[in-house]
Amino acid sequence: MRKRSFSYFFASDIYKKAFNSYFCCFSLSYFGVLQYFCIGIGKKISKMNRQKMKNGSLMMLKASLLVMVFSMGVIAPVIAQNKQNRKPRKKLKELLMMADSLRLQLRQSADRGHMLQWGDSLLMAELGKSKMSEKKKQRFMKHYVKIQRRLSLYDRQLFRGDSLLAANYYKIKYDTTYISRPHTRWTIKLRGNLSGADLETTAKTDGAETHTKVMADCRGTFSIAVAYRGLGLGLAVNPAKLAGKNQDFEFNLNSYSNRYGFDVVYLSSKTFHGYQEVGSNEIDVHKGDISQKALNLNFYYAFNYRKFSFPAAFSQSYIQKRSAGSWMIGASFDGSKTKVKGMNIRLNELALGAGYGYNLVPSSHFLFHLSALPTITVYSHDYTKMRVEAEEGSSDTEIPTVRNSMKYHFPSAIITGRGAAVYSWRNKFAGATAVYNFSVAGDEDHLQVKRNKWRVRMFFGFRF
Image (cartoon, rainbow, N blue to C red; front, side):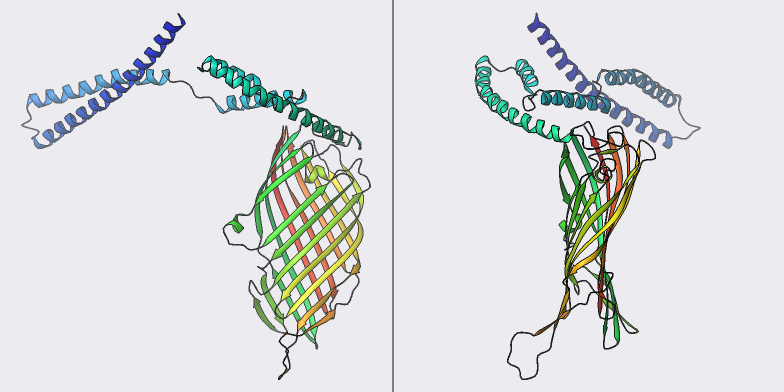
């Protein structure tokens, strides 16, 4: 009976397809003939005089109109019936529900320590439905048993590592009335970054003052980040650099926790451009005239880490439930090498200081962060190197240079400011963060260098 029913439905399906194709061809040819017939009638009517039009032509026109109306009345229900017989497409909501059910199955398998084997039941069901012979199924099962042994071994190792991560992830070192952990394991974020830098120098030589102000091209990147129980990894792409329009390079490394955290920023730029004022004259500075390589390090320690959370605003690995603030101490390092025509400027400064940060939670969906960490330079090793023209008749092939130490001027400082705004709903969140670094070194009476570095980040993410 199964074979007959299968052959019957299969044959009926073939007949339906053949009928539909034949019907489409017939309708197309029918409408083509009908169109040709109506065009001929129209031409005939235009040629004939209204007064001399014969009764036969009028009857023919009425007949053609009658045939057209009749054909539309017959064909339209058939087309509607064919549309009703089509299989309905799956809606987006159904697809999302299917994906969510697979996610739940994967999570349940991971809780039991069978994360890599969660698809066994699905594979066995598909194997039972397949038309493979028994011999091929037996061969496949022999190979699959070996694969299952390896997967079970890897599952045990992953389960041990996951249990250690879970123990550290849910280890409570904070006040649960102010801070909590997301109950999900995975976090995926899409980010858009925009960063820039500018440089300002003031120099006095023999009573003449030279003021230079330049800025580098802004750098925009798109990135995706994936985190599992607080451990994350991200990948960023710079479209302008891939297209060859921007030769600058920037590297950012950030790590935030409730108690301490740090930022590492390295920038290599050759796109500084702006102007230079020498007395009352102004000279344009073009791209390529000034290049810089800079490294900035920043470290903080928060005292009220049990109630105040930095990562709640910047990495979303914690959730700030109530408003709280904290005093901080920190250290900063700013090192740079700037090349100008005929001169190199080297800056190496270490600074210590204290600041304050605050997280404002006006509702369960919003979080606003603002913090400032000013540091005063306690150690500096700044100097300049200038080329000197060789004397006439000198046989030296090397170009001589003169090194001058830059005088320390109080207050030489490095200031770091941060801000963030986050909106969260259900298992999703979106927002923006900003980090600003300012440093000043040297003396206005000789040479002073001011650097500004900023980064703005827009993000959207979800947890599961």
